[in-house]
Image (tube, rainbow, N blue to C red; front, side, top):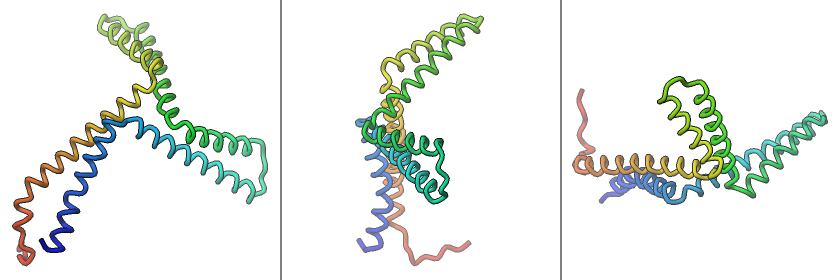
Length: 177
């Protein structure tokens, strides 16, 4: 293969390979993605606290609200970096409370049997998420992994299928309109 063909081969098959690898990681290690997002958010909050502190010093505008904002941003950022799965756990609990409240509301307002059954299912799911908060995070990241794996596999299959046409391309042919 020529140097140009090697670079085209790598660029053509690198994206599907990376997508397949990412999909497998998300399917088999969903907590890794939760921890990474939590650390990124933690760093963002920490940097926001530092920026507010620098702005306060530069503007010489000292106020209790700014000092409290800095303390909350820096404290929450450090806490998220030290407890990376807390983000996913609290997110699952919040979703669980919202589902439980929605199920209770729908049960009291529904006149039909189907509506009452669906509201009970919603409330039970909400209660399950309150008791098992990491379940929502793992399920979401695993489902994202399945979708990313399917997209990467589809891209790879398409590019392998087109490989026959790709190898026969003659770069010296000028396309006429």
